[in-house]
Image 1 (cartoon, helix red, strand yellow):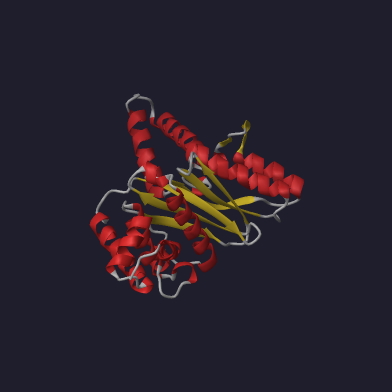
Image 2 (cartoon, rainbow, N blue to C red):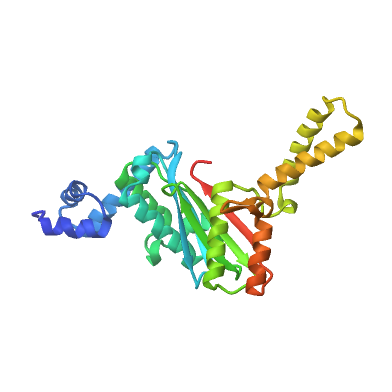
Amino acid sequence: MEITAELVKTLREKTDCGFMDCKKALQETKGNLEEAVAYLRQKGVAVASKRAERATSEGAVWAHLGNGTRSGVLLEVNCESDFVAKTDAFQAFGAALAAQVAAAAPADLEALLAQPWQGQPSLTVAEYLNEVIGRIGENIRVRRFAHFTGGGVVAAYVHFGGKIGVLLELAGADPSPEILELAKDLAMQVAAANPVAVGREDVDPGLVASEKAIYEAQAKESGKPEKIIERMVQGRLDKFMKEVALVEQAFVKNPDLTVAQLLQEAGKKAGADLRVVRFSRYQVGA
């Protein structure tokens, strides 16, 4: 059977594979379109298998907001090189997958990979990922996602060419333009200042204990009395909390205010009790 340019074009539209790959698949399957699709999928699986152990330290982060700013998704997908991370094919895959997480709400990564890709019953996300790996030629790994649907106002911020992304939920008021701007500012704050928790009570106790032990050892070297040492340790812990707890940080747009003071002022204007419910911050490779 003659392999026409039109037939190759049809296969390319079905699979997004390159011209020569499609032509070879049609030649191998004697022009049978469905068999050619299967051939290319098998090729993708083979490439994915060969590259499965290769390191994926590059990639990108995507954010997807929906449901009238009451829900949002943050997604990180990794690949081998920054060059591939910037390609249209990789970017399109990540954006489509973030939208799928928002629509289908998988419980975890395993559930996401087992879902039908874009509603196609014959193709799972994992199988489509193998096809993408086959086309791009690098190992690709869906690393993690966060999906906020708690009912508060959800904002997202993606920075540094998709290398850092933040999803943040703000509760206490309806999504007016002012509240949306505040939520976005807070997401930018998280991206820039990298807190580990909303408030000091949310900081991992193990991290606090580790820092406290360091401060105690340093303070004891001073030879000062025990009561003074206790105050020194507490002072350093308070300083530490101002670095790692979001609401205790200085607001990056106005360092004269803490984030807690910013929320209080904005809440008075809105007639609401504003509070940050949660946030997720992803940095590629970190």
